[in-house]
Length: 406
Image (cartoon, rainbow, N blue to C red):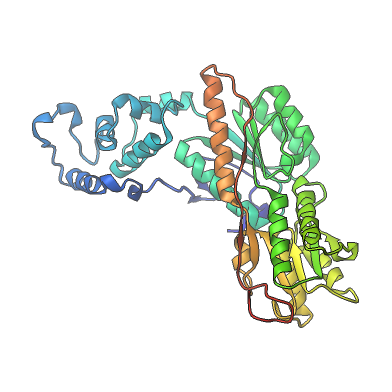
């Protein structure tokens, strides 16, 4: 689902572009209650309301009249706990909240108008700003954000910020509209003007995938330097000594860290760095074409090429094919992110898996917890969460000369 520039602005509880994009809590997430859920569904379908001596008039249930008591009974919680979940209260454990949500779904429970009104009064609205040129990255980020927003029953307001003027105007408009929090994916995670505007307004925000997270905001990221060092070290272990590197956008702090990781690994192996083997990109496919073309046009081209994201790595594979080179026989190509395009091209890319969707889910959750804490009068300090990465080996790399994989 390459969204790219097609998404301008939308507000959602899980619905987008006319189609439902909501990852519901599956009934299978409650294995101990699976048989009970199926039994309840049969009961609802049959209209059977005889449940033994504990039978109560208020618990009568039909497909048209499931009650909050039914939800509480199936989830094994109190009526008050179900009410807290419906109203978005913070003082419910995540495991219990998911159990209640699963019971609500299993029973097709629909809160009364009064309950919906009460829930609306405590609704949380989160703004998600984006200007990332990579459709694959944006796709993963949105899926994770929408999924977590749906799980927590919060409203997600997605806004395109494709210029410096628009991003400031957008944030001011969101602040004036009473937005509860803001998520800043790359490259907006590194825009100091936005950080200052949000901090001054007292609006909590989470910067995602910043190489140098702002102290005043919460953040979610990975260790970009360590990840790039691991990938470069992997290429060295295959026997490569001339390794080209396509750097990312210089305006993004993660770009510098990935370059440092590349240089670290060369130093670890006792290899001298060569500025001719480093080309600048912008995290876009087109910039990857230009950078890879320049590197492969050297009098002594690299035997392996490490691009700072999968868009540019895919472009490098295209350049190699255009030159009549075999990947990985003549040129190993590796990327970073493990975005959808990593497995949509041939050969599939060896890459660093950055858990994009999980990072966006974590960002939404951090904001929700922050907002709920503030509403209950608690002081909330910025939190910084670093997630793990993984080197994923596929088909785009091998030893120099096309020998079998190590």
